[in-house]
Image 1 (tube, rainbow, N blue to C red):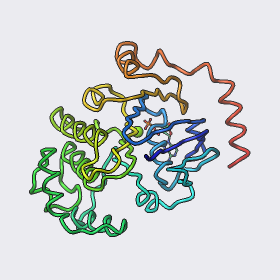
Image 2 (cartoon, rainbow, N blue to C red):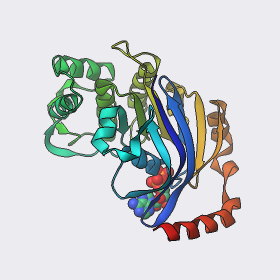
Image 3 (cartoon, rainbow, N blue to C red):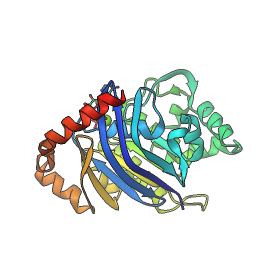
Length: 265
Ligand code: ADP
Ligand code: MG
């Protein structure tokens, strides 16, 4: 079994503290939803876990099966089994998806025999037209096609733990269903018979969770997890909105952490 463990994570970008102490554990086969309003720090959390440049860890730890993720280069994190489905997939003119996948396999000492069949098979499973496999990565794809493309890469690479940063943004209801169902299947069983996928699903709508069933739901507001619970928490959020979980009572704490931060930067 694999486990991603985030403990006491505080992080900053642009001189501002964004994550103010996050604790999360995601194990193989589990789906943890992190829900929160715009600007809560959801994408920052994914950036820190994957090692995106421009973000600074102030304190805390991130480990994958005990290995120090924060000490690894981004490619090492990916090779270790972490994968990010990006909120805004990048267009890469001149680079074909199959070449990216072949390089990723090589980076994992995995044979690329059968890769072509795997790509075609996975594309069919999520309703991604084969002809898009001939295009440069994400170039001239619609929002929904880009997210299908991201899901295809996830399914082909079969990482240990995946972070989905708003898989549900910018795609229509059919694409959402296809992508969410494929991820749900991966969390139930691995095709190769290995461990099922563990998922950290970042979203601000509960509709993703109709297909991708969360074991735990965490509400992130102003850089903190302000509530955690079962799937019923997502349903409650749909009724009450994020206002019910507001964190403006933390003003004095925020001032204290801001001065602690200025000492660190
Ligand atoms: P979410 O994904 O929950 O909408 P983000 O993690 O993208 O939120 O952003 C959280 C906060 O951090 C926002 O106020 C945003 O403006 C700020 N932020 C994000 N990235 C940077 C950056 N590189 N420099 C400065 N501020 C940033
Ligand atoms: Mg975001």
